[in-house]
Length: 443
Image (cartoon, rainbow, N blue to C red; front, side):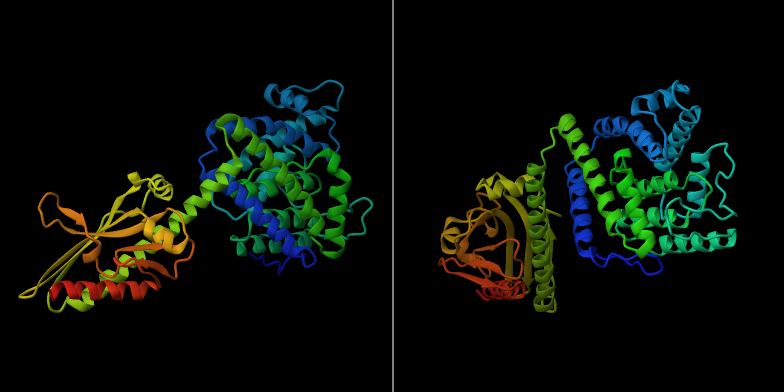
């Protein structure tokens, strides 16, 4: 995973790989939650319902608000001015709540974040105050900072067009890093008279929510660390400190989401990881089986198509996970038909085979030291007529049994009827099957 920071004021050279590794791990954990179907509406409603007012209170607290999360909830839900606090704080809470509702709506639309979305978010945050949704046309300074901000409206507009251009040019960058860049760059330009921090944090969360990641809360207790990290990014372009803070808070958010999933749906991360690994192993098996069939189909047509007819049928788009697990437990309940191949050559004869998936034989397990798992076996038309197909290792083409030592797909393990086991490439396996069909046709 990489990120292109060309065209931005930033770099992450000193901590770049560590940050990218952390991003990958966070994305993996979210994907694991989603892959197990553990983000139900109840889970999401519980988690984000609890966090919504905390997020509003903490973001506004970074700008000086004294409202708690509970007081913020009263202000937003009842439109109340909370006594004992500056009335403006209640107004700010309602405005930010409206903005975050809009952020959630924007997250459902396609990205990337652009100036139009930015201006809409800022206008909601400022409400009826002057300058809502309008870039400043007068110089401002950040108290206690040596960072020099764009002075004129034209300077601000030029900087924000660069901001938007980078956003549009990098839609595939990891969402966490996209959010960190857009957030930090926005505070670096400081394009508004007021509301820059709240807007920047809303943009950060827009990027996260759009990518299916939980939103982050930068807390009032983080204020000094947050401001120091922004100052470092302004002074030397180092994204490391702000990235580390944001990712710590993303880990907090993810832990809270996992707890909600555990409470409401019994989510178990360790079990989910194992299930996810089973699914990856199954995907490898299914892909390898389909590739073997495709190679065999092509080779059979090339070998026999000019002198006879070849008919094939693929029975399963994939082996179901429950059947795969059963086979790995040595349970034949997971057996299933895989494909059929029939070759007919006039004046020579017919050869018909059914390939099916079953439990690896004890002979193959003993010879290779691997445990139970799926293997491909062959059946031929039952000569007794008692049933349509009957397993016959001695008449199987190219080997009595085929399996893979997952996750390796470069070599199939092939057991012959004699018990000998060899490792063969997929093309070699197919060639042996074709030769077996030829022998059957020649009697």
